[in-house]
Image (cartoon, rainbow, N blue to C red; front, side, top):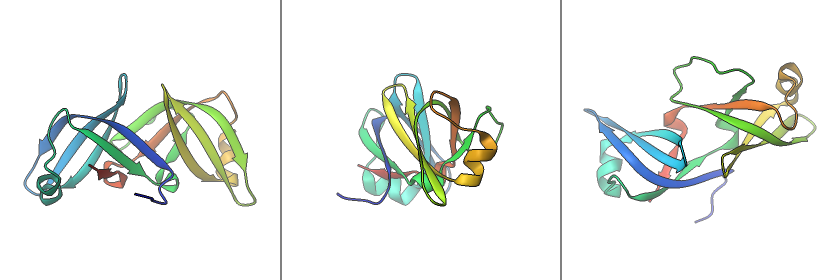
Length: 137
């Protein structure tokens, strides 16, 4: 399968929390690094999701918000990472982040890059909502 999503994180389902309409799926993508995805119960049932199952999580690079500080937000995913490369474009920049052994890519405006003063070897926090994570079984 080919997608336009810049981030494909592979992992194992650690927990599924089901509610009346939606379920939260917790995925371990690297040692001590988990991400959350929220999907409808119909999708969960159609995909026959179970704990221990291998799964891929897709996240568009433009869905990531970066911060130089750990923030308290309503976003379920707020992951510390190391900046390994900054590629500046005419309007936006691509920020390559390393989470343990996993790579994550963010697209931010050049204004944000300048305001946050993000550079190689910095610590940054990748923030994204669980509803921005698309699961592929």
